[in-house]
Length: 158
Figure 1 (tube, rainbow, N blue to C red):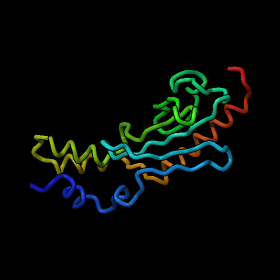
Figure 2: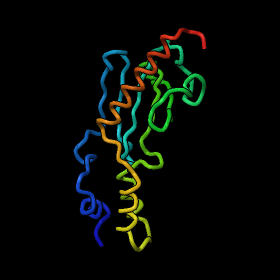
Figure 3: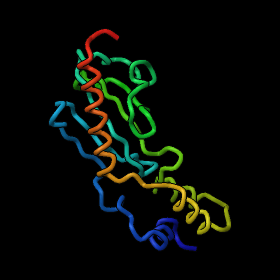
């Protein structure tokens, strides 16, 4: 039997994750916030992050608390923590929700599965899941930066 990665290559013609960077950082030009896209090492899917400075009205507020509950980003916010080096508060989202295709997760499932018809399982996942490309996640991170800037501009009262 072929290794899972080879089975994936035979069944999936377009594999953008093989040609995308695993990490990129940039400063969003309209907001001045540092944005990052980073690949999850185990899952192979991408995560997006935005760092806001101290003084931002939601600095230190965890992603599942008001007023962050109204942020519209893929799958909702799933991360918040202080960057100890910069003092910025980092908020993020991931692309490994139901309906998201995670290439490394699939390879691991295939590797350790006793399922006899792995090709059928792979074809089902490909019909029902979407891989979120690097460019797509980068745009979503920029959208998050804009929303966080607008939230800060609403004033300092929460």
